[in-house]
Length: 222
Ligand SMILES: *Cc1c(COP(=O)(O)O)cnc(C)c1O
Image 1 (tube, rainbow, N blue to C red):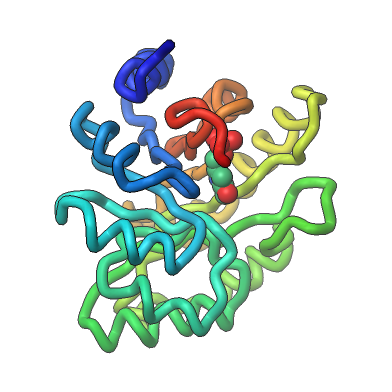
Image 2 (image 1 turned 135 degrees about the vertical axis):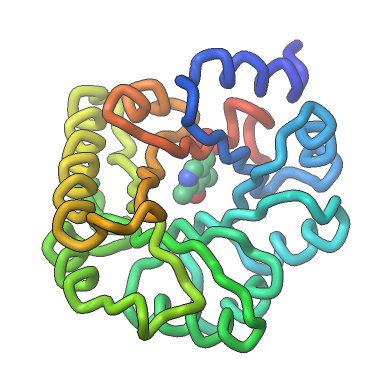
């Protein structure tokens, strides 16, 4: 059986230079994170505030913690003291709360608006139009404690890889439009967070710069 270290090595061998691997450790114990850490992995993704907080306390300080799940405003303060990047900003209210809490801690937190492209109604996020309206109205000078570093999406949960690829292509197109319209002189807007265990290769082909992989590294979640 492959170890966590083997899985990380194999995935990294398939990722082009410059694509960041976020190891999604949700529902896996701190011990599994430790094994990945010992294999050199430093960036981990979690989807629940309590679980992230508990693991952060047990694990080394040089881990870069990313939050990738849906986040309630009242949970922001639990993770803001240490979270590096929040991939799943799905409302202006949440963006404002992240800024408020980050300001209290004097930290700058990276954020990515989550874009809803999938067919499923259950998925979160801004439509492309809503995203453009958000960025149009966003004045970085009003938000010195957050940095919008890119866009994130989850593709439809389907076997239809052509559909998945189409959605990734749409996110890439939206990213390029937003970059030109709102971030032309801002180098920090440069990430496309897309691709999970089953669809990271098509995501990378469509320009992903951050893949979020759980099962492919840690095995099935209980
Ligand atoms: C769980 C999760 C992942 C990882 O999914 P795998 O299929 O286990 O790779 C990636 N992104 C988000 C937003 C998730 O919630």
